[in-house]
Picture 1 (cartoon, helix red, strand yellow):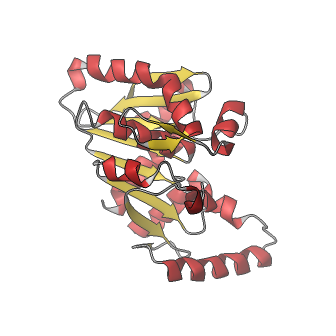
Picture 2 (cartoon, one colour):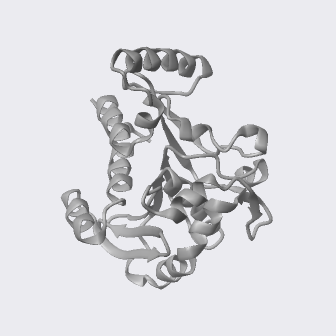
Picture 3 (cartoon, one colour):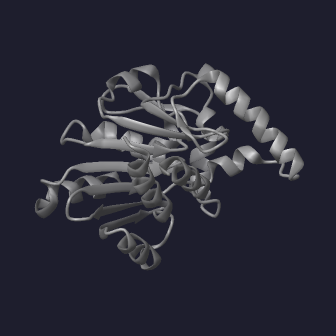
Amino acid sequence: MKTVELLKYAKIARDTYLNPDKAKSAFDEYGYSIIKFFDKNGAQAYYLTNGVERVLSFRGTEVTQKSDILADLTSGKNYESNKTLVHVGFRKEVNKIWEDILQELLNDKSNQSAPLYITGHSLGAAMATIAASRLQETMKVEALITFGSPRVGTQEFVDGLGVQHHRVINCCDSVTRVPLWIMGFRHHGTITYLDFDGNARDYAGWRLLLDQVLARKRALEKREWFSNVFDHMMDNYIYKLKLASM
């Protein structure tokens, strides 16, 4: 997927953090309208259309939401309906709004012919990945596009996810390295790696190490002690994608 397209979904993922009154204006700016806002016990998602495609976008971690923090910190696994294991906290958040989402998608006859894209950032990326895995059993998911996604499930879960997945990593974003590999969690998808200079590249371990050195050097010079946290912010994903799209 071209960086300019990734940028479009990045903006949607960013504006999914807004509440409906402000989100409506934000989505309107790039041609999308809200079909439905799902909101239950700290889990949120938007179902959108621009008349050509549909987008299901999940909201990520909000530091003011206790349930979001607990979902991120929980590290156990639980079974999905296809008998594969996923992160128990991420699964719990999806389950809060899942029946409402599924009912809306199945009953939305006027938009069903439009391709469905699923996106999200951080916790929202993990929720989007689980949703894509579930929906592939009942309908076609055109693509999954995630930003700053943690690892979501085991290798069996990854092997069973047949949806095209564009997974974007911004430089030293530490969230993309948890939960730990040694705990049995694995990543899914084709990586677009945004390097220190804002170039979109294929992922390589040596490049990440180099970028970490450069990022740490810059952070020390600017007295910024949490560069990895900055790289996880959605606005910084958008900034890098804009550079890569030029």
